[in-house]
Length: 259
Image (cartoon, rainbow, N blue to C red; front, side):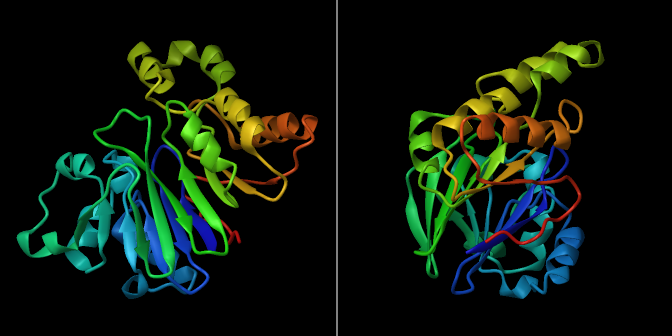
């Protein structure tokens, strides 16, 4: 299994996953249709070769390009019913056959790849996380989380590659608190908002092992920095004798391949 980020942050999220036998999956369409197509083509991936698009939830930074994908392609879409009903556009009748509804604890196959669905603690209608298993490696997408539950921690221990949120930093929020409206901060830091850097570090220390690749993801440009996330996570893990392959996902910048 191999993967890369097209973009991850508060302005657009999209992840590409490819199985060992060549099953090609896009997780979220947070960039425009044109930009997504451009990035994929730079990696020698054609839209016509995509086997599925999986959607985590209906917030615009995860579905910005979805309407155009549905209009311009015939790629199967996997989405929760709550997310589908919350979409602000109408899926044309002749395209509804592309829609596949999935829910918590569903376990289904796309080619050689098994996909497990987990509910996600986030302030949307029916947010879900995805765990991929191609019988060689396991990969999970864990962003947009108000907190990490025990079931997720148990599963995270078993994964080889993890996209893991370090959205905001409490210290930076405190330093810049006069710059943010209290409703924004309350939403961000709630139990169904986003995962803070300190929350992420606490969870990582519980489940990380040295054979894993961790890509720090959905880092806010307003309330955190890439350097801050990387340095604090690396220091905390290394202090505890943990040395995973630690990487950072960027907004508006695609990543290298991770395998």
